[in-house]
Image (cartoon, rainbow, N blue to C red; front, side, top):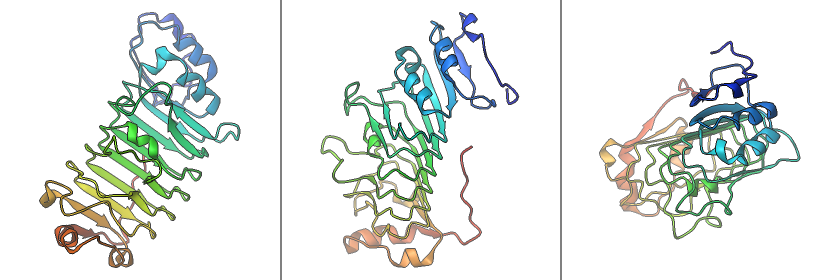
Length: 266
């Protein structure tokens, strides 16, 4: 599969139900989108894309959107496509976005509501996306368990107060949060969150992130919880809303020295 460079003519495989191309050397192009739309029995599609035009065509192909489980977006740099608008996708499970120049990722409100969105989406990795300022679209992903955000220099908040809603409490299923090299990140969320399933937070090179969205009731199994960090200076500057929150979480900060390395999704 790693040597696969073309699937031209795949539309002739009329009974094809699953197409997994993530480990191949090819990315989805316009002609392949056209062919895939002819596969009436396709149920699972895992694909990598390197063109904003192809992304747009794919996301407005209802039959393919219903099949999409894993999508990798890389090096989307076209100036005419600075906003990535996701329609609702019931089957989407994993999203990886790397080295893309969009200014905003949003959920297309015409096609979904806060109670719909991406019900099966569990894993999101975003790295080297230097135009993004927030990730408010994650409000539409109620069952996300793993979130990694790396090296995105303009990001100010994961979900800002301006874009939050009283209808949805985010990250109810989140288990792992990794934040790395986010120079302008000031907050994850504007208020404390319950985080009933959270197990680990990794924070490295986020100098402006002083306060975590925690209070004395957050994280139900605190004895199994860890906040892992690399810079002592950052740890010493962490701010707390009250003494009860500080006493609850301070014992669970774990120091990892300079030898600790970030693992990138490929």
